[in-house]
Image 1 (tube, rainbow, N blue to C red):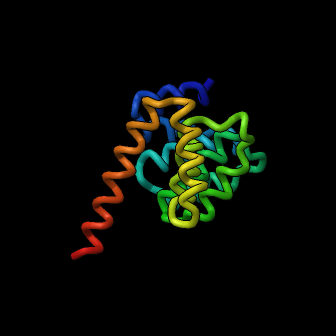
Image 2: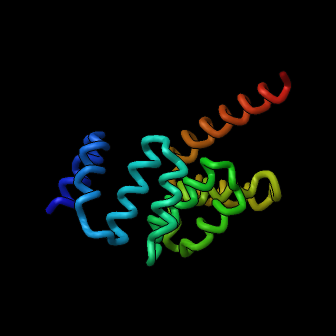
Length: 146
């Protein structure tokens, strides 16, 4: 009951209330995942990493979150390793896109293949994500030119 209420608080953006409830629950993988997700959403990336790494039985969702966290920390190799743990049939457009991002510096061909799979699964998501990604790349290039 408290877990479901904590999830409801999370979806309502009441992260502190959700964390308070989750802290009172027994330490289980679902609780750890939800805590890691909230810390990630709050921008507390290192704390999110600590929580997700304590999950005993990783699910596809927790692997995706781990990939998100590693990518946010700039650890593309670790992000790709986490994402590659998700079975091919279970990969969403987002996972394929993130695999493209993690491969873009090492292998343009692999990255393009991953991006194509993302686009094929959900062209709307792909278009939005690519615009954001290109915007970030432009900022990085601009900063490096300074």
